[in-house]
Length: 587
Image (tube, rainbow, N blue to C red; front, side, top):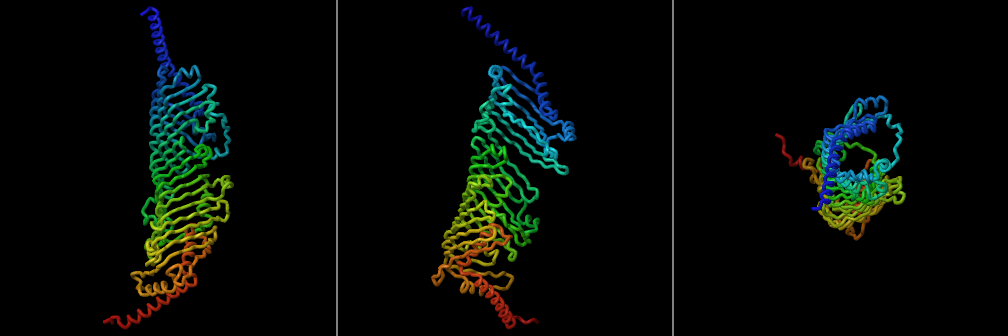
């Protein structure tokens, strides 16, 4: 080897040794300086409210790595008490602990030569965040001067660019405590994981609409949570929440809303006839959600909401007293308008949801149930946003279901969202089905049964508002026969048979067209009682049309009731007569 190369290699090795020793020296002797500067920055920027502490701070200028062990950011309680006395204390204080914070490859040379800070990885292990909220009235009237500068403008005097390829937060423990004079409530989240990709802060990133708060993507994965409602009757829970900002998607798995007790215990504690509701949805997904708008203004704007399968079960027990309340102005679209949460969704898609309503009869003490199975639907223009409603004030719902699992039911609802009278329409069809499955609700509640009925189809078209429903209904059927059943203990079996015979022979048309070839069209003109809910009003209006098609006009209905009463009296007389003649004499 030539002597010149020996000199070059020797000089390079010497320089490398000098640089290594210098970096080692700076790493060791900068720690106290950095430690002091870091603590002073926290104290000065928080008006001495917060203190920072850690067990160990390591960084290496050669590898570009740094780490902090057992980092703690805590509020000084004495300082907070002073601020409260001066009416300067904030409503929220924070306690943060991090077991281990690691920074990989922060490229010191670029900081010195280009004023650019680039970090490959930031890894934060098991951070614990505790937010304590204590309301102070004076904060409602305090006007704080906000710093309107962008994040880049705030750092531009020191750095021209900050970029982080990946930031990972593993196993976040979050607790929110709300304190009042008399109570303290807590919300706790466990094992929350966050992955942040491609953070960039420079002169142009703030204008990049593809980024969410200077990031290319944030993925949040939160495990299950259970929340019990203040009235102690219900709980809300879910198995998993996932948020993906890159795809503008939020997915909620295993959502449940249900009573904390059995059905019998629920009504025993309620002591009134009020709907008990159970909701169970395996997956709910929001697509194309505007996360920027939600964070800034708490407005929920999304392209679509997907409900993929699930169940809705409603039950009531009429053996308990019913507390009447005025339901006018509480139709679904009116309740949407009354929500404080601004909502705008282009569409809501529901697929394969089973819906049921069960009720225990006050008179017969039995439970009847009607089901709408495999329900799917498309709801369009679901919004309470006043600006959006000026462009399109109609919400439309197209729903397909199978009544009692058999008859295909297609219904279209239209709602005029800006009409003060709650104007809406509903029209649809019910396909061919056997009428006997309806006994699952008729027999327990009315003590009657459909002995036979071949339903060929039902068509209806109704215009309604808060007070009245008007429209027409076509009911095509044949071979309809009804039986009125007797209670086992009431001794009216014979009279019920007489009434059933009279009803089938003289009151109810066994087909439509009837035996004379006349086709009966149901005319609907139904006045809504103020205590009737929206769906009960829909059912009662359609029932009015069905009864007309079956030939049960108000006059014929009165005739049926009169015939029933006469049959009951006749049964009592003949029964007493035969009992006196053939009854056993007492010894």
